[in-house]
Length: 209
Image 1: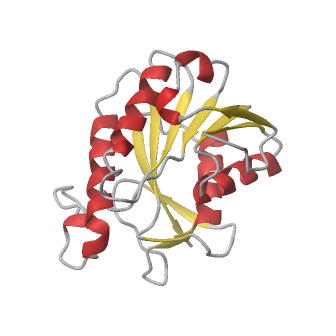
Image 2: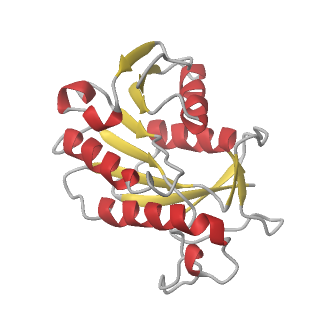
Image 3: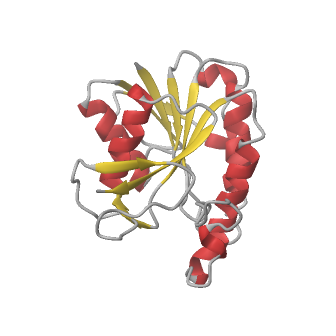
């Protein structure tokens, strides 16, 4: 399998690349500057300049783009559109590193996590940006996308347990009543989806067991 990771130098991107390489996949890191990952190949290009030819020949493309400041948060949607347009009409799968704020907290799917009273105020802006990103992705019938939401507590420095629960649109708690996952375990779930999953045009979510 040939796999490309966009924005591979980020915290999530590096662990996703590492997980894929450790499984023997042919991995290309697409980064703006020097490749800081374990990927065997590199394309030095800004995500906003990506064209169809850059992504040709890959079985799976993983979008690990992340923006964190108020002025850059709208770039989530901008970057996603660029990538989707480049993959439009192809058989290449697009997996997107998503957020937890868009997960539903009721069976009717009328209330999302970021809309609940206890959702941290400081994360509402980024949650809203990623909600918009998912909403726009759902409109794309021309791309074989999968949006992968982490648990509510997404821990960059968390340990790699190798175990996770695969869920869907709703916020899911583990046996301890927690919504938590490390970046390392999230990377496992992402590569599992890339190699064995088939959630085309669906949002899935993952939580540590």
